[in-house]
Length: 311
Image (tube, rainbow, N blue to C red; front, side, top):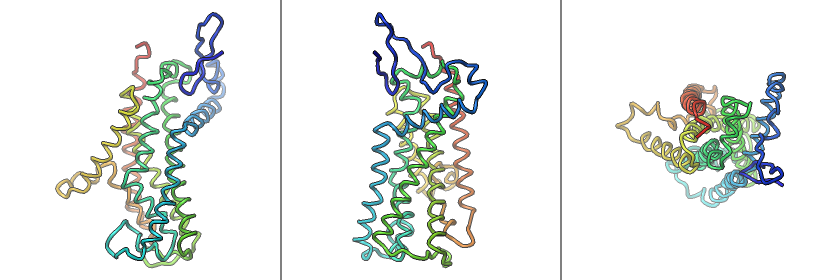
């Protein structure tokens, strides 16, 4: 007999008493973890990956993200002839000539209308607060795995999910671009023509850059998740920060703080579609993402390592 609590089963002993034990992926003895720490980390990480990708809500998010390129591909195919030269997202004008640019258009739209940020907010906001809401956080904090390792594994799993989401969007967009539009050699923004394979590699690089942006946003969500026992509150907080940052980034009077906003460099990857590659925007973006990840990761670590598990 067992009592289900969240994603973990608590075995029930004779007489009705509940014997709580850690997941099978945790070492039963601290000495085992000390003897082979890398293996213990990998087992813990694999377990967390299964939890993140096994939750129906997260799978539904991936399903929606995979459908969006199909939807936008059909819409752009039906309306591309009516698009003027000045409207629409970046790269929309190039889409009629090469379907590879559908991936860039869709990634831009999904970042600006908060579909990708929403997926990052849901997964990161639920990381710690979800465990607290289910009542499993106390057990997680008292096992030999350690709080720092718990936080690191949680964040690593979130980063993997963000990367999978961005690559899924890029891959589905490339498939739809191949089906609905002409595909051939890719003409870059600088006028240079590269092979289709080189163009696809540049699209994948853009997807990885977008995943790095979502990883920095996930650090904010992870910090928010340690400050509350309600996942919805953490998710809402991340979305509020994102929307506020987007609004402030559009106000000219606030230009002095634009470069310090978490969303400012989300679309600074156009240099990847120039020859030679202009790395300035990409480098500034990656530095900004890393700074936000370090700051809010430190906040999450300070909160989690000082949490009182007795209360």
